[in-house]
Image 1: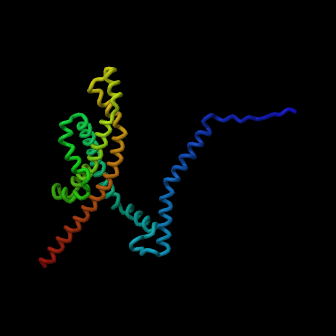
Image 2: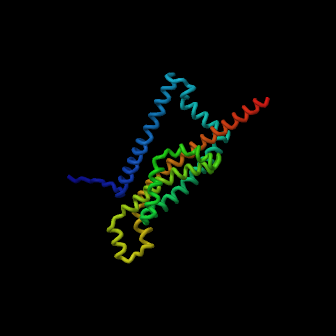
Image 3: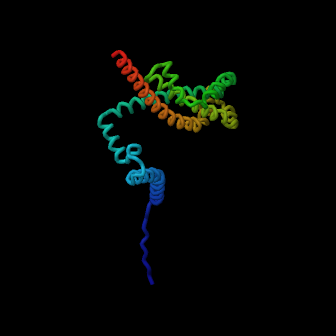
Length: 239
């Protein structure tokens, strides 16, 4: 007998795009699933009355309070100040950290002077230095930016230095054999090789910047409360 078949024509990358879309959707679902599960458990605990609502409000109550704060404009102002402090401290810390890390890798004498300082301050809790900065610089943007700067500076120094000193010698020798001068050798070979480590340090510094900026806001509010209480107590004594 005679059989007639119909052959469908599809682009070669049609199934590939579909597979990529499904794969990205699965990855997104896997990332969001823990948050959804956490929200459900939170809601169930509050709905069952296992915890006092004054200590653990329901997710809906938290969302309503957050919407009221945005409508009032109070949280927008505080958020802008916090982001400004975090951004300025992050940029300054990253720029200085990259420069110090490169200089540590280039100069042995510079490394001998800087290494004890970096090693001694790296393990310090940076949030504990905010009251000290407040005594030096006063309460405000300078104290917060200084705390964020120090928190971002150290991981950038360590990661930049590690990325530069681990540059394979073969790359350096090949570049020199092709006539690359020392001035071009650093940006094209050493900095390029250290770029993944620099980005890793930048990712760490980004988290530190928000934590320190938020903690500095808390210190500002606490200091204002203490100042108001002292002023109120002084007025009562005069009465």
